[in-house]
Length: 194
Image 1 (cartoon, rainbow, N blue to C red):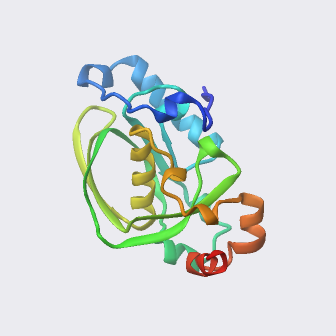
Image 2: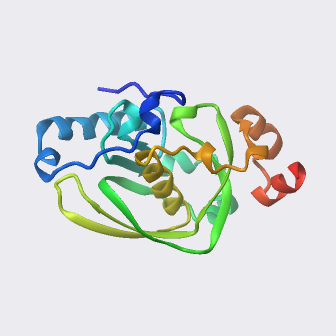
């Protein structure tokens, strides 16, 4: 069943989420929540959803970047973002182990701040340790768009939103982004606003 996504201003988005125990992970409550979060993320649609966004202050994230989401993005833009389809997966109690010094700037949005976007500099690559939906330890090294999604969602678990690290002069409505700046690289947009 789709859940209600809370929006910026809701205090739960500013709390540090608590870790889940292995016993909790195996519970029917958490397993149902994972299924509901998957449905909610797909209905939005989005590529990631953190439990605080659906009013649960726990360290649980779902991620999926379906190939169908890429159909309106040019091959050049996909390559620049290093964006590839990602299968559905769950991260519980994720821990950012490392971030590259190299950063990339791209527009980023959020389901809890619908209708807007801004340029955010994120580490180009990251390593994350986490537990999967069965409580098994996992590790992932990611780069490009996947690394951006991981950083964005883990920020949610720490009470942070992309607006906390955005380049504020690039903050725009999605309509204006589509009309004025989506065709060029972020560096061109930054040159226009500085």
